[in-house]
Length: 313
Image 1 (cartoon, rainbow, N blue to C red):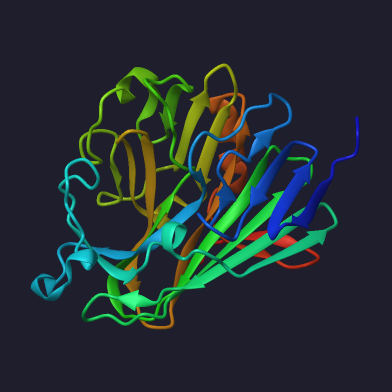
Image 2 (image 1 turned 90 degrees about the horizontal axis):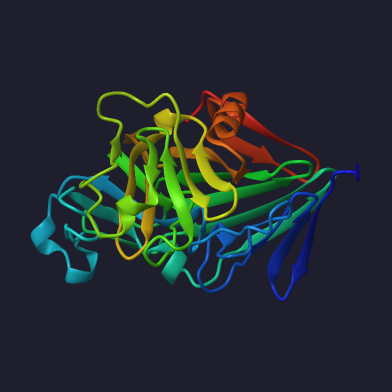
């Protein structure tokens, strides 16, 4: 069996990742954050991700209507529209949406023995009335040799005091399709296996398959889709207690949104979550890997090593 390897190469400003099990690209310009759409490729089957990218990052918000809603410009009002947001009331804290509006992220790339690591970050430049801009988001991506998956972590250092500050991300990532032509089924550890036919007609986030932490954290937080004729692609948040809410609804595509946090923070505090994303042959394999990593809340990496840290928000 060939030796395991993980290599990173900078080309035209992007980080090209090549391991013995997969290839991927991290592009810091254009539609940014996470792994670039369509570039996470499984060498065993040739399958690739089917959406807009993996571990894609949006903005900061809180549950409930903004206490000064009537003072907000229209662009800063959270729209509780059935198709996009359902009837779940929230309000923006800091903007813009990173993936579509940051345009370019500072990025570092390190090649190490047995893994490659990419880091990205952004500082929000706008805030709604009553809040101040300046919170910082940091993302760490670790691509290990010998694995069919990679690790990611998103951490926010808050510029504000907040009762339930949330970071919205896409995990594993949205799923593009036309009448379920690209996938066979969805798996949510909170709801079980769901046939693709459930996603032929649009429905809101609170219509079906909504997960909320109100009654305690789930046992696990695994979200996956079965690529038609291929493997499962799964995204896992390794400590379920870090997820406030998770959506899986149809709005022209299958929308996989997670909201991280939902705990009180003071200015200067950090919060976030650690994730694992990869290709799997079965739901049972996903759960086996999840149990091996359960409870990790942070991912620490440098030029010589990386490790997952448990038990610290």
